Image 1: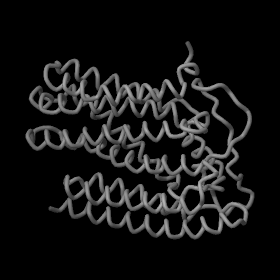
Image 2 (image 1 turned 120 degrees about the vertical axis):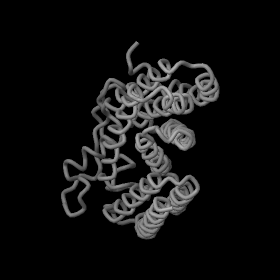
Image 3 (image 1 turned 60 degrees about the horizontal axis):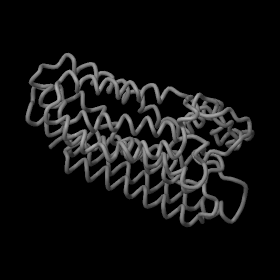
Length: 334
């Protein structure tokens, strides 16, 4: 059976539900009696699965990146392509030649939560840092590993599985009905699992100061980025439904900016996690810049409403970014 056959929306959704249901049981099993060798092996296998999944082309964010490299998202270019993109050509789906419009393009986009392309550079330090974390577990002392790995391995494995499933579902073939929300659920599952990693890792680091706790920083960055990315994914999925009114999209976008700000400030201060706050500040700044670079669609009543909403959204995101950065600075000093 090929990957294309396995990449079925019902199967991917069921797999995600299985990970969610199985996480508490896996957590209970691994935190009580699992050997360090098993824990380390599971972390390596889960991270490797994620890396392979991410490398498969055809995701919607990959198409946006391709547009940017061609200059199609530059509003100063009068001949910019209006987000006409080729459908995915990868082992996960059948090749298709017809074009489609991505809800995540800055051209003709209805969503108001859409970061500029430079924001995605954060994936580099996240993956390099997590690779360093996975490698460092083999160099850590048994005392340090025993204090940390039993607490974080289950949610770390779940986060990598959820993100692998997101890679499978964040594709043009998931563009109708309930299928467009599968990727939202998978990314939300990733963020939730990483929140457990962050909480458990912070508690373990406090009890075992000898641990190289700075190696947990990329996991916190990953948690922050997927928190914001879930909101981006949700807004894009809703915006792709043309029956949703522009005022509803503005309300969802404004609410998302406020939620991201509340998460960034709240978790940064309550968990003393400046890395989380700085990551949300980065994401919100990118969303503000995305609204500044947004290329309007052809003149219409809907576009007039969305254009005004985009200006308010830009200001909300800049304000949220500033608030998260201030909270991060405070948490880093106290």
